[in-house]
Length: 448
Image (cartoon, rainbow, N blue to C red; front, side):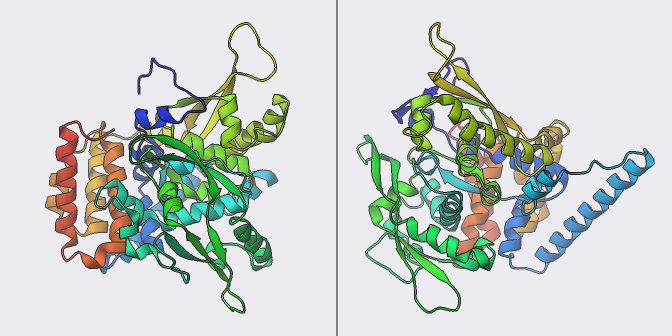
């Protein structure tokens, strides 16, 4: 995007597709850069959920954990030597991060812009549910992005739930996977049930290239009776599923753990928006369009109430999390008025997006050699490449293509997690994939 051409999003969605937002200019760079500098691994967190085959996986994980422990002890000893008492967290801060993961341990998921800009009035619990649904569809998104398949109806494994209607997406969502206390299961069940009745507006692009706003209910919800392990079946019809996970309008990476561990629905929605523009550092929305995305076009008639109920609470929560190291970005905002008017409803809202101070600190102290070593280590530990081949591939890594390369590495991890059993020689597959990737990058066909 042209830095000299200020982009203001209005009612039309044309600008988003034409500007080509992708995972390569989303939240991925900050997350991976901090991970590497901290000596940990975002992909290790993925491996913890679904351990990789091989004797070395657990050993590598423990070694890194031990390294983190030693590093933490060293920092504490240094603080004592200087006579500095560690800063105590306030009660509010302790509650805020009670269930949160440090940003260097978080994982990021591929997020279509159609999902990001979906206008809806979901509760905080429902936002977590649809994000969890998106997380379960990561391998589908990988296939769409890599263009291995263009029609989701040809991916038979997305019919995983009890109710398998014609095409579409079918998923069983178990309550235990939501990390919700059993006392809150009734609330979770109500939130899941309501998904079938709350209308949403999804940006949609037809095969002819024409853009629409589709107004629909996201899914059908089937609730089994008399089960000891409570769950629901979510079923999305084929055409709705296509709109929900379409990457035609672009995509970015999202720190899912921030969504799961925040309680304010507007914090979650605004975090989703700014994550798409983290590397750009700024994005401007017309106030009318911003209200529409958050479904507050008929709420809070006075703009001061939008500030009090929406913008300021989201700003405070994300900034606090980012400064504590539990979120990869936060924002400040400016009211923009056209002409001579300076009060009342602004014409647009400009978001200034900042990386977590810990991310900035790690990026400033990180060099290209370290990035290449880290990339090679990931290839060896997660894909079982020979060290010599991993180092050979790492020579193609540059500061300019680092974000795109790590995004590629993450999408490969997600793909192999689901499809690895069908690939006879995973190391050779990974080598070939990165050789093609770096070849396209050299031709200028990869967005960085």
